[in-house]
Figure (cartoon, rainbow, N blue to C red):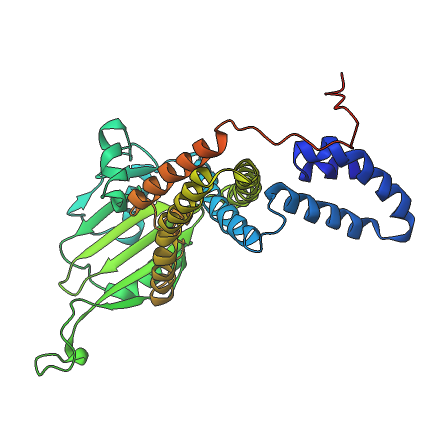
Length: 355
């Protein structure tokens, strides 16, 4: 097992000191717990990957990069899981509307299935819409829904709606009341108690999420969407672990490659990396608190997808700029350079590499 744990160390380190490490482990093994020894091997190996033994901040910078990579990888894994979810069927919407309002004719009801799981401006994401997604309108990229509406709220209103949801087997949430419009506080014209409310009832059944909105102007809107697929959770967790590990390894490779280099390489690499982390982290620091506040302010039978918590793709432009800067850092790290020859004992000649 300990031989496998040596993979935590960089390859050059394993070649020169791997045998010595394993011999030390065999010698002290009986006096120490195996789990503690394994943890120490991994911890020291991950630190060795970063190089720069005198640096006090390299671990913090590597941790930031690895966590951010893990979050983005988790979002990508969740996105892949969503793509494998069952597509919406307009016949399901017609059946739901018929159960809730059997005696009324909808003014509008979708007659076609959504063309994709996620849509932007009502269309699947393609090359023609990629620039819209990445350069300003990423917030329009959203989960597909099916909708129906009534010009007038059917008789019975909220009371009948609750009864019919229960009879149809829906697990409903408490109604959510929101002001139909806002006014400027502390002004004579603003009386919050007189503002009418829009009422939204959320319900779940199987892999469906239903939202019925009873508006203050007397209309009713019905929205049917998919619940989060069960595969999204393990896919997100696996993506986070892989992204975390990959980010640490990649940062360590670049760190070791730029260690001891000339200032013309080290200086730009550090500056580019710092600016790139600002561009990558800023959307997260901005988006996550806003999304948390949004979730606390109103009920959500289905949480927003993970990438929206990271400010994506609405703030994809900073992410793209940060990615370009990181690619430049990797380019600087990949530049060839000569390492100083190892010192030999006085009077001894260098035997050269062993064959």
